[in-house]
Image (tube, rainbow, N blue to C red; front, side):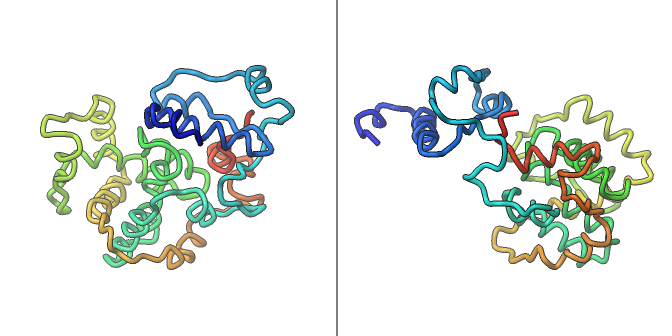
Length: 256
């Protein structure tokens, strides 16, 4: 890389420059979605004709991204944990705490899956995204628990020993107030038959951030096997209402 060029670039420009160099080295064109650009603070998208002119003689990527770990022909939930989800230590810690506390397997699974949207997709509204991702494959108690925990996190319940997390004061400030839709979701959750499952996710969530904890995802293989309905075609390659979400994580840079 030309030092004179990069020394005058901002960090963002250097990243873009490195990506441009990498693209020329690959045998196919890897494109970013509009959503990916939005997370960089840009509202933009390069069209097909522009990209063809920039990378003459190359085809657009329409399958796995060669930069990512390969996935098996029929991927399982564990394959996504190991090859597509980032920072899964917190999820496994949370599930391990639920298991140690003697909670049901559904609660344990809900704790294991409660933040999969964060580690595999997006932080915003992660409870809703996560619930939709898993809804076809788990009992309603699990998916609804994952959905509702997003709102319940911001509201104490001293009957189960859950106070407002001190980390939220550090993250968001003392004056942060949840948005009205979160408040309304909390009110609905209070009357749900799955309230306690969602609340136990919160309890086992807030204490599961030990950076030195040694956890083992494989210890939950049996819990997953009994409580997560793995499609025979492979997770994301079936015809469920949320299969497309898993395919997007499987092939995040497919052109179409």
